[in-house]
Image 1 (tube, helix red, strand yellow):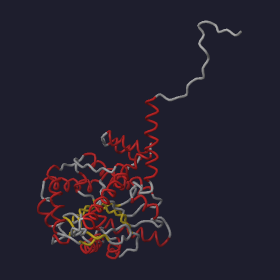
Image 2 (cartoon, one colour; image 1 turned 60 degrees about the vertical axis):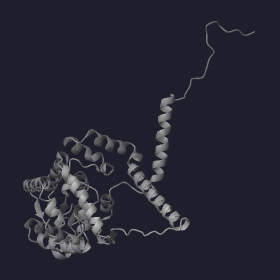
Image 3 (tube, rainbow, N blue to C red; image 1 turned 45 degrees about the vertical axis):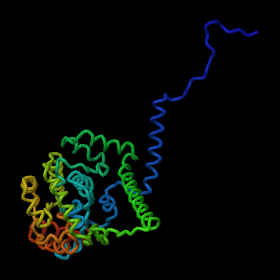
Image 4 (cartoon, one colour; image 1 turned 90 degrees about the vertical axis):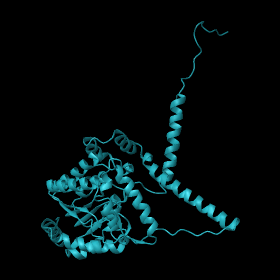
Length: 367
């Protein structure tokens, strides 16, 4: 008969179960990861400027950098015709971006090409330097941006956002999720319209979109205006609201300095553009202290870093040349692009850089 020694517990296999809290966190992260992988089917949060840069084969003569104003307002074809120098021109402007994104793309992208562009046309929007700016689009920034952001005293939450997105890729997909949810809510609105018309037999007059975007050419995304009055007035009210509290952001002004300094060291000439705005904008906003301070700062930093500053804010003579106070429609944009090309031919540093680039392109050598 077998006997057990008193005080000796029966043998048991060790437990490999995770603590309840750790297991719950693991399940949540796993579920989030699975959903995020599915969201890859709906879009990519990577900046379209980076995608375009990877697909361009030949060296660039002129690279356009900026936000939606440059995206819709600068035509590479019209610029090229007016410049009369055979170089490759591409519009890398991305809607909703600011000086942080522009610096990231120029320093880590354009200047890292085997043959950097001869000239960069940088068209920053004054409001993208606003300290109160909320739509930072940090999903378009990467770990390579952290040193500059840290040195310029970026908020800790911004650094944490970027780091988290790099360490845990699905975190970057949150912006895609937001876009998907907006599309779903739009579809639900159309369902309500269907019920109104088919079930309740009520009338419905669809509201036309304010703009019609046309085929993009080398990154340029022009639009025609379909509905002007209410769209212009709503946008004007939004601009006025933003200008009431606007103040220059040290983080973004220092980022701009980094952009210009890095370009100068790389031997790339930068032309900083203040793009045209509607007469309403010129009269009501460009005369305010914030805008004047921004323009004065841009002029000073451009001079310090060997860049040129071109101010064409007063190019437009009629509000109807703009879809809203800050964005030219196609006809005005192409007329301005041609005018800008002629003006660039009068800037000695631009002419020298483009001629060198053109010679290098013909000879098959780096410019």
